[in-house]
Image 1 (cartoon, helix red, strand yellow):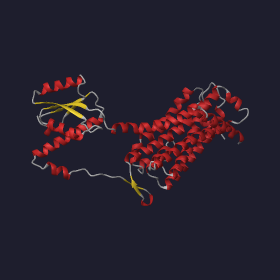
Image 2: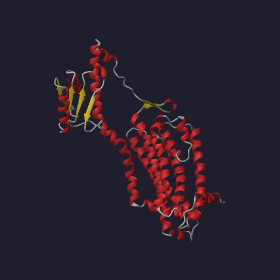
Image 3: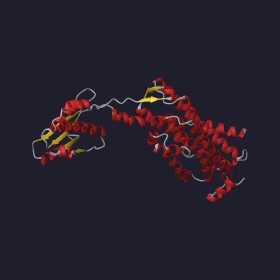
Image 4: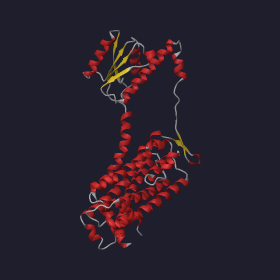
Length: 413
């Protein structure tokens, strides 16, 4: 036991003092949060520069109404109109389209809209732009034009437009998050969606960063023949156990730092993104998930002679663990569905699915206990198997063991 703690403390202190580890610990949460919030902030931020657009109007009157609608409803940060409209009306339709296309090609205008004469029946317009990926502008112009066309159709039908607008006014949909014992608080849709994803990404990087360090450590000592010197003083089991424990504490410290900082920062802003109970669940799933993957990575490091070959082998595992991230939208919307619950019992992805579900709504206690027990059993089996493989393969050079040989080592007593 003494040798295990010597190896563990050496791995922990050495990696903790590494500049790259410190940089990664500080930068990783910034990257995760920025990737989540910056695009949304950019899309929802107010524009500061007006844009010139053109409207090719074959109807002769809808273009004027669209200009008024945009002027009244689309504004810059300083309150001035966001769009300046160049109208083409009462002329040859093909010639008007040609002029608008020339203005777009010379970058005089940002985009142009073509309104055909039969718009009320066809309900189809064409929008031309060099950057069709600007969804914000497209949405604003489309909403404004829909208002104009619907008003014109109601007028043609002899209806009172003002009355209909008043009767069909949108309802303010306020979200109330109901917690245990009926406690209510105002919900935040964006925060409710992003928080579980941020948590699962934190768990993903914490587990795989520690496991990757373990893989490289074993490979480096094996290729440098340093492991032969180490094994003259300690057993292979002590070496593997010490490495796993030391790097596990490293990942645990990293994760605990993220959770504590996130907890206090959110609390200072009056937002509770994680409770103390959920924090305990988070650490439990991290610990079991790390031990499970660490056993696999330690075995891979002992089997292969080069990091390139080892990385190709673990890339399959990396793909498997990305599945919960790919399914995060479904799990957040349906945390208690059959698919979400079933995936929670698959050991390779149990930690990630459970953290996603806990971030939305804490599952029943029996599910938490049973998933922890299932993951714990498979982690124990993985550790036992890894110990047998590590003990035999760590001193093998020049020959990569076959799959039947690996199974024989694992079955051996």
